[in-house]
Length: 488
Image (cartoon, rainbow, N blue to C red):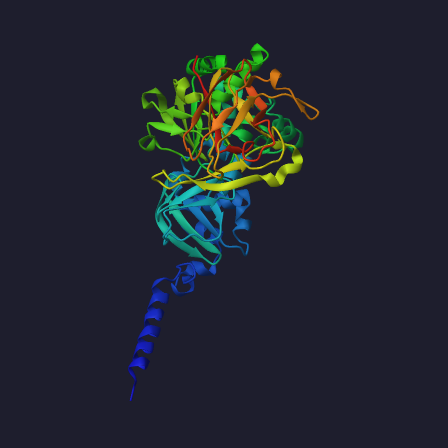
């Protein structure tokens, strides 16, 4: 007698067998499809196909026939003879360009058209990356005849040449004599905005991607010389670009006219690039930079068609008018991100907390810093601020006193001065008075204002406890400091 358990077991094994067949990889099953091309390598299979034989000739001419005869597995996106007839003579007559052209159609390993991924970024032998979209789109070409197998790979017949495109940085370099913004971007190969740029330039080795390591813009904003990622960049025509630079000069005042122009130019261009390639129908009304600047995108200012490049899209713009209220971003310093403290022997008194505002309807946690019972008078916790503008700032803090039963006072000093181990608050940019930190208040507190005449960093911002050794009276607390720039 056959048990019900045995019947279920037999059915289960049958279902697994059907699933295994239905989910099999076409490349893995190529031995069973009766294709004569499985006896020849990719070059031989492509050359023998009358629809794409001209590309087979190019494989031989450039030496890629030997590569495609090797034991490795490849995928080749092969343009039709008709498409290849449109090849730019400047490429076909230049051996190096022709070799790079052929390489841009070949990728290591096999990629069948039978696939589930919406987009796969393929690294071609040219070192360019192309998007394989859905089942039949590679870059901007369409696969018209997919899945031709050979013994060491697969080829797809496409309707367009995959001519290697410049990346955004290569395009910028090509425009440096015709565009003020491009000229400035390239000049940052030599100009240093930050001290770390000097070190990067000193250590950079010559080569195709050397700029990625040493150019101030590529290093500190976005590396648009990177083929692996996709970007959108706005290249502003000279009149609009110069207007944006001039608008920033009062807020990026430096020691000389030239340095003021250099910094104003940098803070203009750093906000003109964004991760992800946005096609015209995808461009939102506003894009936010990695520096927190909200940039309005006025499509009426786009000049001509978008320029599709190997790692993104570039738009030529008449102007990109960023309001100063958006350009001058607030500086926020988190309490737990202190740079030092004094006396340095009291590290154990500092508590870095995960905290929660009980009145917050979203229930979001935050981190803060507190110090209780330091047993010293006037304990100092120090911070720094980067890239401040030459303008007036409104100063706020949030300090949470939820860890003891009495209030305490603390003060903030902007641009403190220290020589040896002695502080000189009288020489600071601004020394605020002591302010009481109330019990269990999660409200942001306005402290006052300070101004700076030269843009740059403030390396020493000090939060100071009360000048007493009494327990709980000399505590400290800080969730964050906020410096809000004022438009002149």
